[in-house]
Amino acid sequence: MKNSEQHSQTSPIWIALAWGFVSIPLLWGVGQVFLKTLAIFQ
Amino acid sequence: MGFLSFLDREKSIAKPGYSRWLVPPAALAIHLCIGQIYAYSVFNEPMTRIVGIDAPADGDWQLTTLGWIFSIALFTLGASAALFGKWLEKAGPRKAMFVAALCFAGGFLIASFGVSIHNIWLVYLGHGVLGGIGLGLGYISPVSTLIKWFPDRPGLATGMAIMGFGGGAMVASPLSVSLMDFFASSTSTGVAETFLTMGLIYFVFMMFGVFMVRVPAKDWKPENYTPPASTNKMITKNNVEADVAIKTPQFYFLFVVLMLNVTAGIGVLGQASVMIQELFSADSVGDKAIGAAAAAGFVGLLSLFNMGGRFFWSSISDKIGRKNTYSIFFLLGAVLYFVIPSLGNLGSAVPFIIAFCIIISMYGGGFATIPAYLRDMFGTFEVGAIHGRLLLAWSLAAVFGPSLINYLRAYQIETVGLPAAQAYSFTMYIMAGLLVIGMIANLLVKPVDAKYHMKEKDATASSTPKLQTAKS
Image (cartoon, rainbow over all chains, first blue to last red; front, side):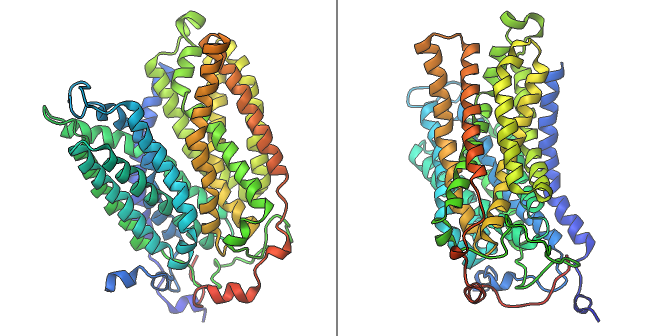
């Protein structure tokens, strides 16, 4: 038996939640800046 | 003292089955917060009218007084990363990130108190010194940890974290403005209340990173990963201690590489808004003139490329090598800086904007690629401590770079008598020259002499207890 099978694996849901927690503010900030950049094309 | 022991390195060693993909969010949680320092300028104007509220009054702080906050913070960042890097390697990332959270968030609270009683020294202490220590520890600890978790893709890993530092300013700027608007009243600019609120928000967010971060067990490697058999001399399989690394020429060549890459980028970032408006004014291009709103959009676009470049270039460096990546930065950067004055004279802003976006992406890429370059040269053993010492190059460039650019520009206009638009050409040529020097320093980087390598038993004695393979 593989060693890794003897232990509980990290749930993909935890990984998704962790990424979501940090991605939401980052995407919000990027979105704010992106909206500002549209002024270049006006 | 259960919580304090929870912070120990031994308690943060990942158990088998722990996914390494939980570590980048932990790193991002820290870097997204400390990246706030690049958005500090949004507080400058409101902080000049703490007494007068609606407009500056007698006794209010001057902009030059406030400018020192950023300089002190950046200087302390470099100094603390250099001083505490070795401690970080021993104490582990969880303890270091906790101290970083205390210092960074605590700095906001002290600065809030300083603003409320109108004492600039407390603001210097809070945001400058304490915040700077939080920046230094917070910057290097997740990076060092990620390098150990991603031996197969160190550039991609550090790019993810350092991209967060670039993104932090994008989050902090609108957040700060919204909070100041919310707290502003007839008796307050809202700055003190905003500092207090942001300190609490950042502490909670950084604690997420503290709880999530793990270090890999000794001898851990990703599933299905076997270190490449081919011997690439530019990627060492040995380790060099931090105290020894600073005695090698490679450290100083990389110091020059980072410092000049940063200086060249800062030259653009600091002047971007004014520069594009002056080069494309109504007098020179008529209807196609760039106004203040479009210039702000240009600055925003540069921020996006600064952030994206961190991830893009550091990921590319895993494929083409760090030395080649920096060679592209310096060669392409020098060419672009050299042709930018001509692009400005074409009358169209588009090629000008594209050129600067590429330059700024390489500025960000330089920050994100340097930890992996250090790992290639000196091994993973004390890469955090070595990275910390190298960040003094960033501090020097950040503190003195803008002054150099401003001095050169003032000299061209006031002493030589050039029009403002033409003065930029001279600055661009200086930047191109700096990048050529950086290119030479990069070409001089060779593998570290074997006499500097640690003996295997030393590395084993100083490393973490042995556990089994975890899931990648």
